[in-house]
Length: 447
Ligand SMILES: Cc1cc2nc3c(=O)[nH]c(=O)nc-3n(C[C@H](O)[C@H](O)[C@H](O)COP(=O)(O)OP(=O)(O)OC[C@H]3O[C@@H](n4cnc5c(N)ncnc54)[C@H](O)[C@@H]3O)c2cc1C
Image 1: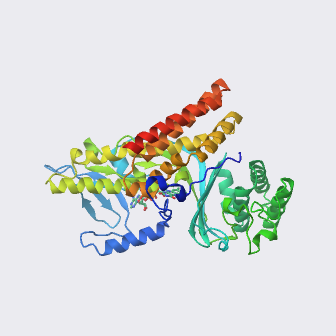
Image 2 (image 1 turned 30 degrees about the vertical axis):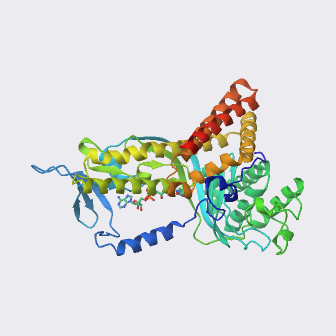
């Protein structure tokens, strides 16, 4: 709702002993990740893959003298008896239900639209397509994530009614709405959304040319020059050659959407009370979305799951080396100890960020905009956030980065709450907040 922006650039991360060429993160399409894992498993003689089979039910062996191991009944009639049952079965986890593990959370009243976007290659005068962009609109963030020189991935979190209308619309309409969502002032983005919904309700969906006309009118009324990258309707910007001065501030213009890539998912926050089953649900352990579901605005869901896998594999391996029982509660405890609070910190930071940006109250908008602009000037703080939150931090085991982010957002939320109560003295509070954030960072650095 304001022009405040924060830029993370690996050239600013020198203080952390990295070079400019160290990427902050890598984008990997899920399909490629799955294909690579399947290929790896096909060379592993100890792994047996059962494909096109569903888990129909799970119960506990109750034979006379049985050890109480879980029995997994499959749709092909087979039953598997397991010493340890790992629930990697997503948000509606049948293993979690069997284990009787409760969880807490809430739905966000938000759907995420995903799609693969086509766009022209950046010109020789611009940086290559390796910058991710995210704009925080009050209805939810819209993210543009680079995949190749001419394709990028979209994750657009928005209200369910709009998501449903946009996913059903002509893909050309969706492409224009994506361009507008990154470029127009928020008031016009909101107006376009209302127009699309009204037309849909009246059973007269807006055509692509009608949307383009409306966007062009809005651009003129905001004095957006035909030569600016913020213009998405004028032919000038699509000509190759010297790009507009502000082209680096925005993602490339979306020209079309790849067929069959548009989908939408409901978003929620959910964390189980425990990762290990006990009593009648013993010999079970949860990983990934079966244990925790987080808003995708920071792209951390699968990353948390992969970190769970790493920790659980280490835990099981050490129990095997010691001749222990891999299904026992005590053998699994180090996994839960390592992951539960680590996951909680990331989930809590992401949830706070979502809430902070959902507000349209003026003091909140003002405080968070000033916060973002001040943070944008603090290179060492940004370098720490970048190196800890991205792929580099995980590789170097800089796990405490999310402590910094979580405490940063706790402070920001505290500042925002305080501004709501006292209605003044915000600069002072922000100063205190940032000082504390710097202190946390210095402590992290010295560790
Ligand atoms: C819009 C959106 C964007 C996202 N973007 C990112 C991102 O950029 N980066 C990131 O790290 N994360 C992202 N995530 C999160 C990520 O998709 C999830 O965290 C991840 O897929 C969870 O993996 P999982 O294996 O734990 O669960 P799932 O992916 O849900 O897999 C569970 C599997 O269990 C199977 N299953 C369930 N029940 C049964 C049964 N009875 N029998 C047999 N099989 C069963 C399912 O078929 C499924 O294959 C995003 C999520 C959303 C919604």
